[in-house]
Every structure is written in C-alpha cells, then in structure tokens.
Length: 180
Image (cartoon, rainbow, N blue to C red; front, side, top):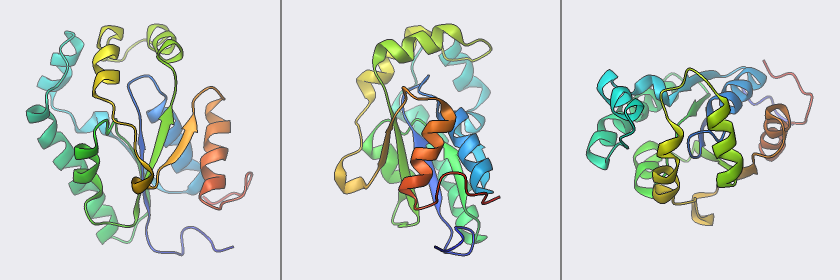
C-alpha cells in the first residue's frame, strides 16, 4: 500500500444535509489522513448565514458564488499538490458538478441518514446558524449521488470515528493507520 500523501492530490467533499455530521466527520478524516480541512460554512457570506439563521433557505442564485468560492479553494489545493477534505452540503448534482468539474481527484463522501436521526441531532446542537426548521428544505433539495458520481456512501448511525474508519477503508487506508 502506498502512503496516501505520496500519490496525486485527492480532495474529498464530505456531503449531506445539515446535521448529518459533515463538519465533524470531515475534520476527523482530515486529521487522520494528515490533510488540510475546510468547512463549507466558512465560505458563506454573513448575509447568507443571517438568511439561514432567520429560517430562509438559500436559493440557487445565492449558492452559486458560495460554490464558486469552494471550487476555487479546491483548485488551489490541487494546484499546490495538496490533498484536502472539505465539508459541503453539495445537495444537488448541479452543485457537485461545480465543485468537482473535470477533476478525477475530487471524490464525494455522502453521509446518509434518516430525517428522524438528523432532526434529533440538529435539535441537540447549539451555536449553529442552521435551524431545524430548514431540514425539510434540505431533504427536498437533496439529490443523492448516483453511481456515475462514484460516491463513498456511509450511514451516519455509527460514531464519527467509526464513520471515518469506514471511509478510510474505502480509500484503501487500513483502520488504525496513522497517516498524519
């Protein structure tokens, strides 16, 4: 097995609806692999965050510049020869096309879970701008990745560490291997 840092750079886009654990899993995955991490929430404008905090979902026109900023970050990592993990809802195929473009080095990790599990997680968390009232709009917009997108799909019922281990296994990195 090769060291994942010695191969061509890889970008993992950890996607799913709000409350699926994207930020937690992506940060842990990046730490485990020794890769750079970014949270898609950090690419939102203050106006977009305020809009969501007030219970208004973002429309495609508002999302496009946000997706463009994340894509620019991805391109910069690839140009620098750096592997990275970014948490981003990437709910629609069109959004994922913006993020991935023609880059075979960009892979999707889809965190899949039931509405009930995710709703209970959103209600239990504090300090996040996304209210539970927007969960229905998230599921309405979600277009799960199809086989042609070659996603790594993982259920969210397990602990974050178990989810990271499952993703690492699909990346051909053995559980418990210290890559960072």
